[in-house]
Length: 148
Image 1 (cartoon, rainbow, N blue to C red):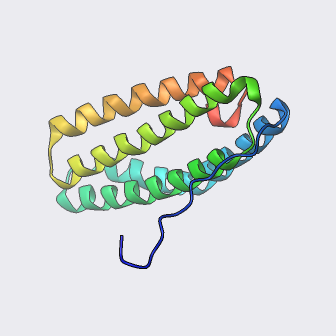
Image 2 (image 1 turned 180 degrees about the horizontal axis):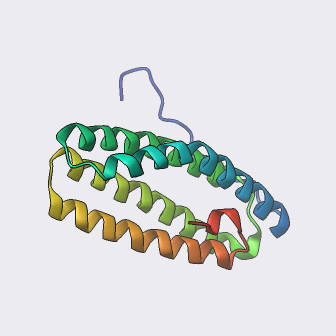
Image 3 (image 1 turned 135 degrees about the vertical axis):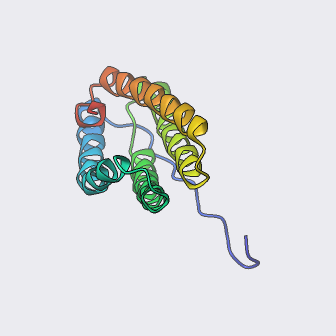
């Protein structure tokens, strides 16, 4: 970090929230993320059908954008007040969301380096993480965050 700059403060959620309040706020954040990420997903689907170096680079760039959007949403989720009884599960879900971003980052690296085996293993890891996170979201009563 450059001299004179401070590290960003960690978001510390307020002490507690009613479960319905958390669900409503979290699902709103997930809905916003899905709406902004959907155009990227559509472009990525089209690019993934091509096998050129240019399409892999463009796809990696889309994944970079998607990671940035996901991390911004994760920060908003982390700042929400949490129901006391669900704090551990919410923390586990947020950790899972961070793992999803890391899996996509590995996938991006695989695309840029044209490493099919790394791409395959990154896609498999991402799929597993996403499934686990959806299950956790459902267990919390989240609807939008539990969608594919």
